[in-house]
Image (cartoon, rainbow, N blue to C red; front, side, top):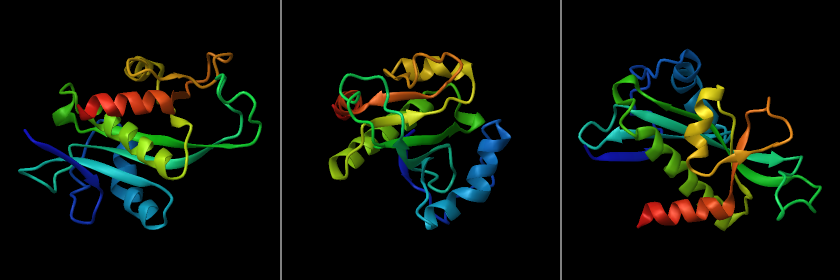
Length: 172
């Protein structure tokens, strides 16, 4: 099946999407387009090219300001807020779970982070996994704890150098 990932439009069928997590379903159905219209966040949907209005999965990106720099040698000396990109949401429809669509969506988010960094700067991609069970999914792509000193905090980040490497590998 050929998959396309594109920005959410009014033509996409948001109501039929069900990932099994009510909050993620409701965001797509009730808030994603409005937030995009107000330039708060952008949602990108994965669709089969044969059925371009059916949403198989999505991710939402937004700008992010890191007020406490991550514990990384490149940024320790910068006490001011730093620019980053936030992966606010990532969800896959139940019909597609277990088929690596989440991976494709994550790689797309990483690629878009690199594009942002080339235009205005960003130190990386940040994410707040919903549960500790999701952490290994992000770790396999090189995501690091945003605050290694606080194991109760789930926030993770992928440094821009790693984003660039992942994006380059995905384009090969």
